[in-house]
Image 1 (spheres, rainbow, N blue to C red):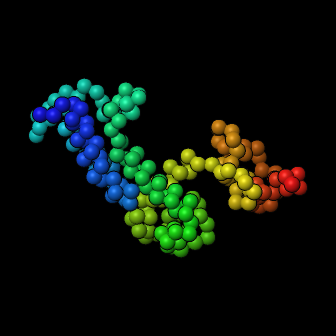
Image 2 (image 1 turned 180 degrees about the vertical axis):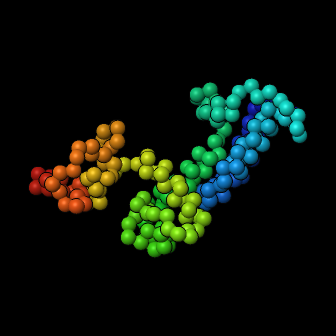
Image 3 (image 1 turned 60 degrees about the vertical axis):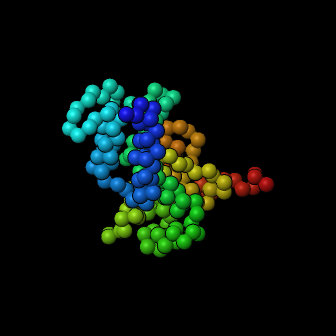
Length: 189
C-alpha cells in the first residue's frame, strides 16, 4: 500500500540501516548480500510471494546516486568493504589505540597495517579488515613531509595521476631507499 517514495524510505531506513554495525565489523558473504538486495528489489517493485512483477529499471541503476538518475540505494558489497576499510583506516591513523596495538602485536608486528600479510588462522574480524585494505591502498597516497617513512620505488607519493609512483628504473641507492634521501635538507633551512 506504500507509494514508491514510501518504499524507498522504508528500504533505506530499515533494510539498509540494520546490518550497518555487522558490516563495519565483518565481511558478509556475497550470497547474503545478494539475498538481502533481492528482498529489497522485490519489495521495491511490489512482489509478493512468487508473484512476478516487471522491474522497470535495473538494480544497478537504482543504486546510482540521485544526481546520476538513481534512487541512492546502497550496493551492499561495496558498502560492506567501505565500512571495513574505515576500520582499517582507524588502525592506520590511530596506531596507539588499544585495537591497533592488539592487531599489530598479532598480525603485523614489524610493520604497519598496509604492509601486513594474512597469517594462518586469522580471526574473522581481522580477515574482514584485511580484505578491505585494498580499498585503502588504491585510494591513498603519501604526503611527503620529511620523507622518512616513504619508500622511493614502492609507495605512492608523487602528484602524477597515473600511478603516483616513480616509473623510472631504480638507480644507485640503498637497497631500500626512502624519499628523505632525495630531499636536500640544507636548502630547506
